[in-house]
Length: 198
Image (cartoon, rainbow, N blue to C red; front, side, top):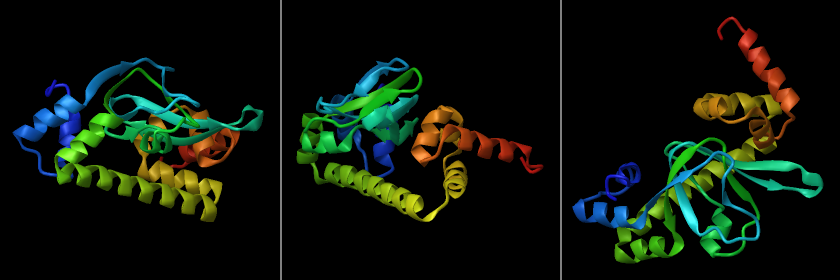
């Protein structure tokens, strides 16, 4: 199991020291799951029971508003985390979908095992607190960008910072995330391709 968990162990190592005991504990806390394209990890009205580390693949979280309009909340590709954090942290029914955009592999930890890790040693608390803080900072940057930048500026900024996501997620999903129509995003991308500098 430790070998299968190596990608997430490597992620832990970026934030906290990891020894042989930690490798076993982390390896036992996570399970490897294969997810098919269009398969849901989270659905509304069901509690999100797992936090998911993406080993390989791509995911999208979104909500469906009145009238059936979809709003993309987040993406996750290789080496990123995803779930409905409000549902997972508070163990209450979810309000969003988390769906695979391609055949994927994730390492999942459930709520109980995460709490067991945190209780076992303060450095695991430090790890999960750190990724929570980073996630909060990311969402605040996104909120500020949405309030202060034009649609074109939001796209250019996202394209610059997350080129791999732009390449891997469907255009309709990216447009929804950036708060613009698919047609307008297509226009921006075409303009980009026509520039001499590429």
